[in-house]
Image (cartoon, rainbow, N blue to C red; front, side):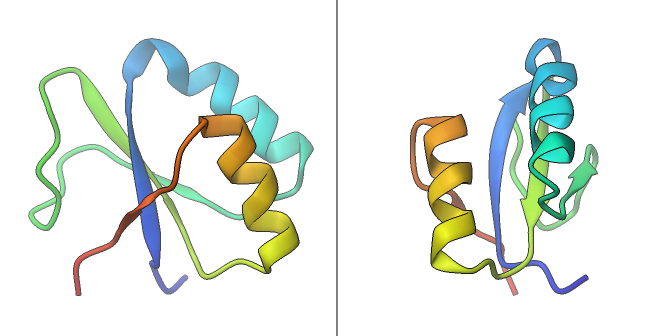
Length: 72
């Protein structure tokens, strides 16, 4: 999967978000200790590929903000 953008979330939110994304059939991966990402203590990254605008709208609504660009 080519990584496009991500959201940094607390561990306590991962289960809910994972279930919601799987129900919406949106591709994603979870990264914990990435050399590329600066994550706060107790946070993980939920990483996405490029998505269709309609699909991205659902992700934006779920997270309540725009994702951060995944570093190249």
